Image 1 (tube, one colour):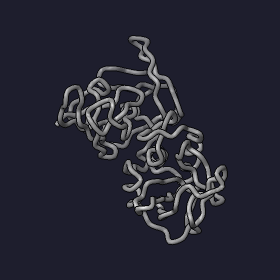
Image 2 (cartoon, rainbow, N blue to C red):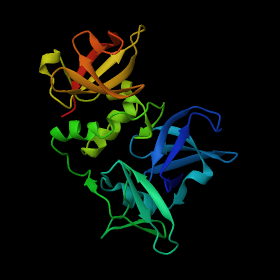
Image 3 (cartoon, one colour):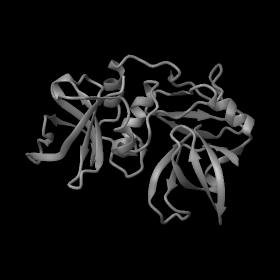
Image 4 (cartoon, rainbow, N blue to C red):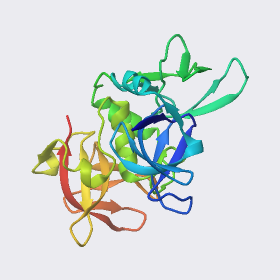
Length: 259
């Protein structure tokens, strides 16, 4: 087994070893992977933060040693707290954009390091080794309001429903699985919507009963979720009511409290 790290802002991770395959998730700067088989210029990898298997182009991550991998994953990372920040390399004067929730490896006195490359980082950061107040979930979620929907996306430039929830909870020091169906198995299931607090999760199913959507509950019977874009809609015991279409867009399956 080999190990790797994301050295670019945001990289597509695909279902198969080709650029034509669907994007199933993304790797943000500083996140690490375990590396398995190679197929042409592609490697099958498993992301360290959520054990998600996918394929990555060999040019879109860097190999690191097992020792480096273990060092980076011994503690939960410090991450970018702003939607977008710019780092600069003092040696080459190159710039690098980093996005909300990206890891900041070996952050020390505004310096970030990946392998032998140092970057100056002067933006805001959040420690994820601390579980933050639940009130922060809604505050962080509002930062991504109107971000476009993108299958497999995990950033303000394109994000899907479960990627949105996963990213917001990561900012609060809680690491969730990647897919909505996996997230639904976490935490405590609530019996009634009236029991839910701001920051709890609501899950929705399709006509076959499979969970296909998730959102974050807000105060005043509202929900923020990624559907076309990150948006706020009404929520009741039936599901999500889209006020623009004057109809229900998603059918409520269950509500969970993660913490």
